[in-house]
Amino acid sequence: MHVGFSAFTFGLLNATTDNESVHCLRASGSQFLSRHNLILGALFAGVTGDVTDDEVRKKLLDVCGRNSATLILGQMYLAITRNQNEADTKAMGSFINTGGGR
Image 1 (cartoon, one colour):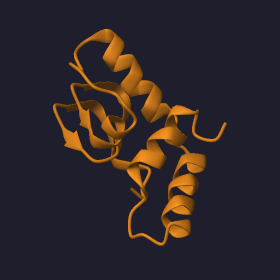
Image 2 (cartoon, rainbow, N blue to C red; image 1 turned 30 degrees about the vertical axis):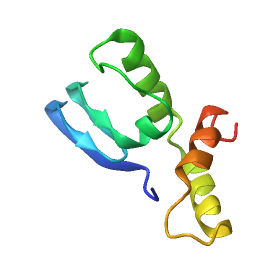
Image 3 (cartoon, rainbow, N blue to C red; image 1 turned 60 degrees about the vertical axis):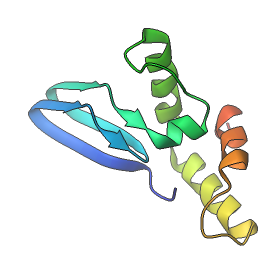
């Protein structure tokens, strides 16, 4: 997990729905709809359940809202210091759950 987003979509009328991705998605535009997207990175952060449920959706948005340069640098640091190709998901989950280094 070394990128901020799997996709950044933009359109005058943009519907970014029903996707499966590794990283968070960003939808933007004059009018846009972003819903029912399944994010593997959020699963590692402990977000489970029906993404159409308001409480689960809020958790998903909270995790993706923390997807910042701090989080990406934290992922890179964990990958480098553990001498691995990918960041340790358990350690990354604890990093995310504590606020992404904030």
